[in-house]
Length: 141
Image 1 (cartoon, rainbow, N blue to C red):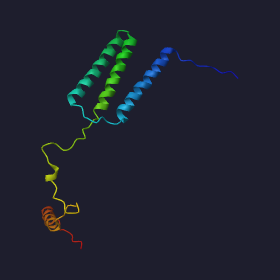
Image 2: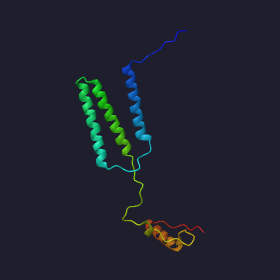
Image 3: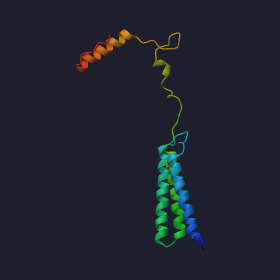
Image 4: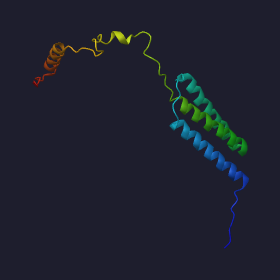
């Protein structure tokens, strides 16, 4: 039995490694944990414009028969696009805006910490709502 060794040419091995690296970058930009802080839209637009410019330069390098330069520039464009995609997923997890006070929106809690519900007021508002909508409220009780 004869064992045949298949060796990839160096150029093909590098291309395969780059394809794997770029696929991993794209995968991580979609599946990795989103950044903690959001990025302003103007900065994301700049990143996308930069990626598009890199793609255009790569296309020009391809047309002028500079394949190595074209590959490098296309790769940089892919990396910048993946970075922009990941940064676009960022969110700020801060508290409410400074102009709102959440304590003013809720009734004060009772002694055991549970807010008290005014059932009579709820029934009145529900009946008013039902009358506005033209429905007769159903009584369960």
